Structures are given as structure tokens and as C-alpha cells.
Length: 242
Image (cartoon, rainbow, N blue to C red; front, top):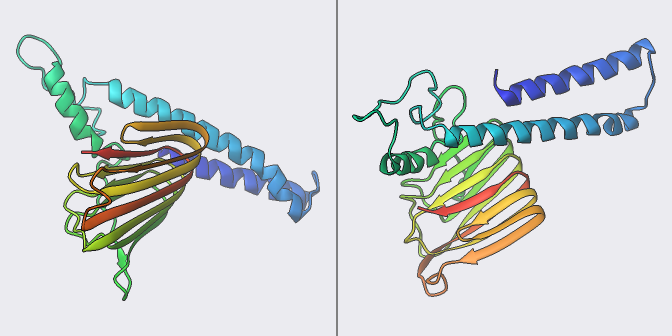
């Protein structure tokens, strides 16, 4: 079972038990006090989810005996000499894994379909679950993304910069955000979160209330450039030049 679905199911069960206990008179609480009762369970659930997800991601990164993705039932081919992997192949596999880091139980996620406003603004939004956004061939002049609970991966390679300033605004509640920026794209990035890590190229912050800015050397003079704003409540934000 998917971990997020399990946590959501447990939360619903707890809410149902609390409401049932109030109805049957086992104990009484006001509707105003239900938030104070549910908040500890919510924090515990979020903490367990973050710990388990971090451990699983670390296991997936270290496990070089399986093929790329989440098909852990099929071992990778062993090259001549009996070595499961050599440094060159391992580096290639790590680079290949970067684009499938947020893959779920069902395999690689298809890029989320956008909603385009009459004004030309491109919007991606999802309440629950991981989201992969591939902006190859898309205009980056005005793009917004929002995600409730889940991991978000954004691929900017192949995106089209309009003359002047282009904007990509990212907001999330719980989950990790990973942005892949082409190395030749002029950009300014502002990343912040309440709890988690922030990695912005060669800059890093962790803990509570993180806020990091970065801009490329050619950003100020570029005729076509990109402004990236990524804000998250709980979860890591990582921006990579690849």
C-alpha cells in the first residue's frame, strides 16, 4: 500500500473514532477543541512519514543491485568479471535515477497535464500524490505549480524563454521539491521552507525557517531569463543545474 494512502487512512480512522466517542458519550469535546486533539496525531503522522520516506530514499540510492526505477523484483545485469557495477556505470545510473527520484509504486509518473488560462498562464496543481512536470516545449513566461501533499519534480530542459523576465512559481505544503535547470539557462532562484533542507546549486541550509537566493553570473545582462520562486512548508527543496 502507498505510504501516503496509509497515513491518510489512519488519519480518517482516528477522526472517525474521535467523533464516535463523542457521539456515544465516551468522552466529550467541543468542535472548537477537535483541532487541538487532532494536531498531535497530525504531527506524529507527518514525522513518521518524513522519517520513513527519507530512509527509503537513502536505501534506493545505495542499492545498486537493481535496475533504475522501482522494479526491485528484477536484478540488474551483471557485467563480465562478476562485478555488479563499476564506478562509471554507477555514475550513469545516478544521473539516470535523478529524473525518476519521485517514482511511486506504479512506476514512472507521467508528466502532469497543465491548465492554461486565456491570459496564457500555465498552471499545474494537485492535492495529494507525487507530480512530475516536464516543461519541454512549454513557454516559461508565466508558470505556476501547487501541490498539497506529495513530491514535485520539475524539468526545465527544453523550456522556451520569452524575451524579458519569465517566471516559475512553486508552492507546496508537505513533500520534497526538485528542480532541474539547464546549465546554460540564466536564472534567479529564491527558495524557502519552514522545516527541511534547501539546496540551491552550491548553497545549502537546513533546519527551520530556511531562505536562500541565487542567481547565475549572466542573469542581469541576459535578454531572456528565468525567475524561480519555490516555497514549501515541510520538505526539502533542491535546485540542480543539469
